[in-house]
Each structure stands twice: as C-alpha cells, then as structure tokens.
Length: 77
Image (cartoon, rainbow, N blue to C red; front, side, top):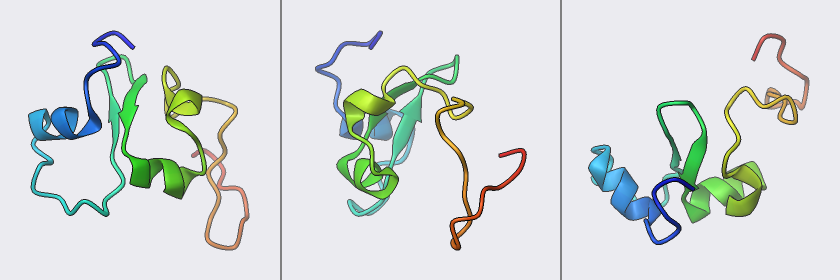
C-alpha cells in the first residue's frame, strides 16, 4: 500500500468527502491507477473478501466477475 498500512479507511473516506456516509456503508478506496488501497469492514463483508485479498487489485481484475442478484454473470462488467 503506497500510503502506508497505518492509514485508516475512515481517514481516506473523510479525505474523499465520504465522512457523512453511515458507518454501515461499504467503502472501497482506489488510487489514481485504480488499485484498491483500502476497504471498510462492511465492504469486505459485502464482497466476501478480506482487505489483504483486495489490496492492489483493480475493479477490472479478471479474478472478479460481476453477477446479478440471480448469480448470472454480467457481460462486459
């Protein structure tokens, strides 16, 4: 993580202007290159991934696949 492991999701969210969001909101923070640099505990729960599994990946990582509520893969996502 470029900014250091000590940087909290809450600090990054506040910096990005998301401080007013409820604590139950899942937040994933990406750097200018699209790499995930932080994820809130709620985001980790929603995505079923630990912070370690997400750090450094991008939204376009081929290991991830977007699915709809029925579990069907979404093309081009």
